[in-house]
Image (cartoon, rainbow, N blue to C red):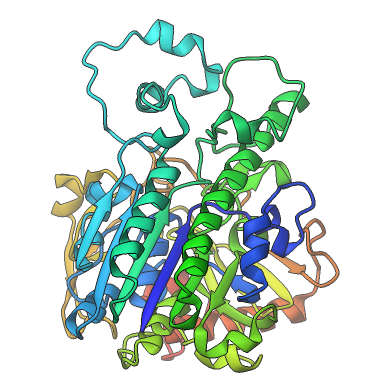
Length: 505
């Protein structure tokens, strides 16, 4: 079996024509939709970037146990399982987090990998004494702290210098060389349309605005305070980047056409999470509740054995963790016992109820649940970081190692169901000076109010419901999922639930 897995970053499904966009031009996503099966109720699991990738590799959610971190020694990893069973796996990426402390064990699971440098704040070009005054003069003041980006951008003067064109060129080279071989997986991972929303002029010109200020293409993870012109500029820059990504994805489709890869190669398109573009008066992700603009993500799958189903859609409730067992199933490999995700291959034949609910969220914030119609954000009922611990054998976060102080406080915890009998370190979470849990980049969570929404009557999640009976039902679904994920015992107390093993709140 041959599989191409295209993983984009921060792709809002509402910016795709296959999911109803009327403002963003994505003709190649629509072109692929005609061949693929489109999943309409696909959701995230652990958030944000690297936690989502751990779910992708392992086929289970980890946000109840761990923040941003590497793959653990006991983690299953689908490219490594492929490699161990005679399949070749290759990663092409510009995701610089793979090469930081908190992501350094992911790319090593592949048979080979290629990295395109210079994306976003990648520590790429060395300027010991940059001319910051000149650099900053070209950018909106809210972006002046993005020094690495301003330096990197100086090296992107032509379209072929941008990361996405380089990535898709590498994918073309891989396919031209290997398309006649068998038993391989290509993971093409494009950081776009993640911020910064920097697209070549020919794409940006498709979305004119009246904004006349300096470069504004990187929204701050915060509440919306910008002028209408600034909001329009940021959204236009995002639209341009999505359209650029769509065009280069179309070039991948051209290779499929030229070599008839449709006859023997699967193609999967999805993202790690969505992105808020001013909806709910927020930008981006991480701090606010996990609204559907972040949680409800695109998934399109083409498989040659199900080509006759091209253009159809599925309503089944699916999740990021389902990708791993699906890829293994495509390769004819068994799913490890630790996996809680479900193979989606049966759904390519017909729509069916894959599960009754799923949970998702950030470590330290709400546990969120969706049953396909209702979504519910359930925040902790205790103060600050009470009953919150990280469980790991790889004590790094994003771009740093755990501090010595944190490690001095560590204890050893007996194994979880997925650690293969191995005990793990139990560590206090990252907090601010007031002892409040913070997102991995040091930002506090906000708007921490438990809320219930009916997605059928209120898809924009603008009017919370007051329905204690339904909330109780959703809480029971959370508990059911926590049991499946072998959540830490203290997590039940943190969220105000009675422990299934008879423990007290």
